[in-house]
Image (cartoon, rainbow, N blue to C red):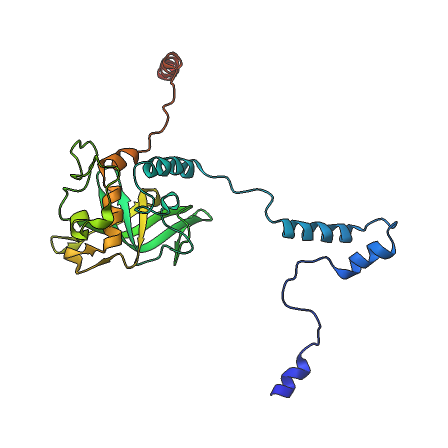
Length: 270
């Protein structure tokens, strides 16, 4: 069988690896015949090698959503120590800390801040939302399928429109979370409501921070965050931080006279 396969294999000396370098025959021709005009094939080869070695000529432009989050992260870092919220600008979704099913995340919508367990990750590709096994960046993600864990005590969670302090140490900018018991930094969480689990299909833009897969332990009806995750939760639910998490879009000036004229013209059109 081996002899038969060797008989039908074509002999070749071409390497299967892709090596980006100038072809020796073109380099030799430049030395031997420097006055001969360059052929189209040679010029194309030299240009391709130069492009490969130089890398991408342009950097990917940040979207408006990314720019807004970078601005929010910069403001939050002004009131929270970086050691309490590392990698906030990337939402802690990196190649070292990839987002994958089973990871715990801190989410925020218009009504509340809550804990979520990732069940699936979605990204829009070719006009459709495809499922991902792992994500090394939060950029470009469209939705997260989550098992929702709500805090059993809301005393440390700042809701929209609330003016109550989220923590007795709210005014202390140099407060050290690491010297505090984890149980006092974050309440227990539950995903149960009337004997059923709570789930959500949340937009990825509501993701605040990725905690990782080993951020919590305990039964679903009484999940407890580990000390490092409790520090992240407590920092993000501070009143000062919650106020800066609101992304305010610049208002557009509307010409009321032109708008009224357009409405009148539309109403008069039979």
